[in-house]
Amino acid sequence: STRVRSSAASDVYKRQGCAVSIAPFECPSQMGRFAWGELNMKIVVSACLMGESCKYNGLDNYHRELVEACECTGTEVLLVCPEVFGGLPTPRKPSEIVNGEVRTCEGVSIDREFRLGAERALDMCEQAGGPSEIAACILQDRSPSCGAGRIYDGTFSGTLTAGNGVFVDLLLHHGYRVIPASEFDPSILEHCP
Image (cartoon, rainbow, N blue to C red; front, side, top):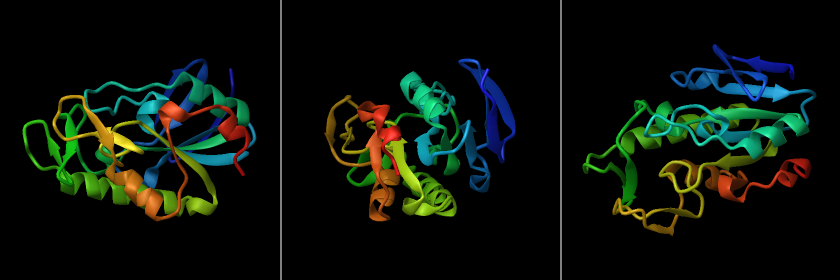
């Protein structure tokens, strides 16, 4: 079993034989961090990709290849879920960006919560060293928060369109490198500064 260092963490769980500590999402200053071995770099990752059940439907988007690559490279991982940081519950209604505003499938605006959560997540990234210290942000595809390059088109029909989620727009504006989870390749971590 691999030894894991963590800070600001409250819940410990086991995944693939590694004890991992993750901070509660209620307080952005307690961002979840974990690392294996000696720290070589720091990345930001959508919490759902690391197995946190914070997705709109209460599930996760566990990305085994990403977790294993972090373990092999000694990467410090900063977990974010802007939607939860903005005060939205899990589970919650599916949402998409409709004419520039985040709305649920029932037409209710939750734009304020998405933007608040994105700001809180950005603040956490800045406190962790900003784009000069964070090698990359690896985020969940198609999400109205974390989608990079392609997001759902606002019709709730599963149709994709060009665009970014609210959090990704902020990250790009502030100079961060954003990588959609679908484009993740383990060699990315080996070549990060």
